[in-house]
Length: 322
Ligand code: NDP
Image (tube, rainbow, N blue to C red; front, side, top):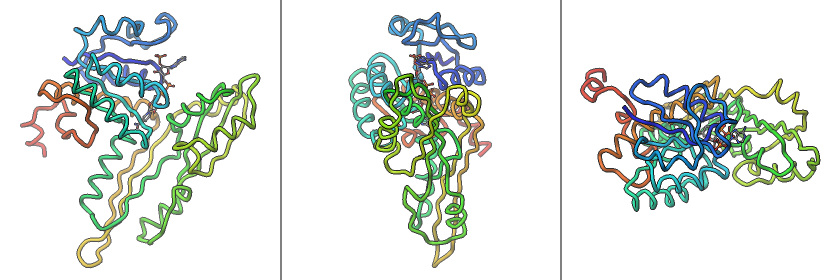
């Protein structure tokens, strides 16, 4: 039995609690939160204070870190990898190499293993981009997201001073997708591929102009896109913008032989982004524990992990069903 602790109980934390119930080889030790545990309503799991986590070290094989990428994970992943094997979903793409280096050093120094930046993007999409590029070396890879709510971007909006609550939709340009699949050669920029739409609730004294400026100039999140900012009431946000669908596709168009057109497409249509991401984290938590048992330490990403480690099924059965 793989014994799991959930660290941080937001959308992803809730999703991990549900996903663990679908994996009989894994058990939940508890939810560890920075808030007062009696104020956190779980779906049955025992909630503990973060301060109690290290005391339960002997009962935990892996911590699944469910904090936000903007400010939680850059601190929590290196700090907790000192004592535990960890899995996170750090999704600020531009900062993954830096995050990897920090966590790798901690893991190597403390004989622990951290699997960083799992989920679907980064995560399953990263794997599919690598497969597609390796198989069709002559071609182009495109990633499209949405239409859906990006939790990373919504999280970043909510951390801007003056913002009470917010939801961000990523909207792909379907015309561009169809043209690429039809084999049309195009020079598509980041701005051509997606549009970002923000629905923001201001705090009582929030300054709309300052908040809008902070959003549209935020590097890595909004500055490189056409971004629309709408200020709405909490009531409207709760009524219209609290579901969390997402998805997207990895597309590679390329040629083999003399000029034979080939298209690889990997598509995800997710009614709940956090429940799906949580399911990916749980599968990688299994891989993390097994690889740690084999003596691996430091940091790994999805690119370093063979698919068989994700599965509870024995290697010989996997080969039989190949
Ligand atoms: P949330 O904002 O829901 O939760 C983040 C943290 O905030 C929690 O761990 C929790 O920590 C704290 N928190 C949650 N609710 C409350 C509350 N009511 N009051 C105070 N604090 C609260 O974020 P998500 O779970 O939606 O997403 C986490 C991260 O997952 C995102 O930042 C994103 O980067 C990443 N992600 C990655 C994906 C990928 O494909 N790689 C896909 C989707 C998400 P605590 O319990 O300690 O207070």
